Length: 153
Image 1 (spheres, helix red, strand yellow):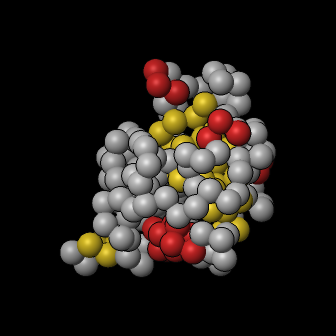
Image 2 (cartoon, one colour):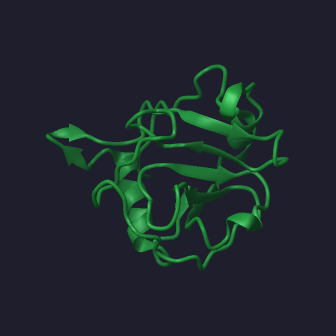
């Protein structure tokens, strides 16, 4: 992943710290390690995204950030122009937390609603494999797709 910390520094820093687990709550590291991708949308809205990062509840309803439960949208300078873009998942304006998604196709309908803060520079094949897992209700993978390791290089 490449983070656009020059364009979206606050959003990129939130993601970075949740990748490294350096942010702690009651001395317990908070972050993506062992969390799952809870939503993979490939057949509906033909090709769209894979979503994960909810280490709070694991089902897309949890929220946490290094700034508190949620934080404001930083800016919408970068558009959802193609596959491999890293963007914040939210439930409306100013509701960014820990959840993120990776686009698997252009998704212009997300522009102005979700902050793009990075991109996949190595591993797009892995994104494609996750995108094509068997899913059930609410596009939830039938088998867990887990982030086993994460950090900073």
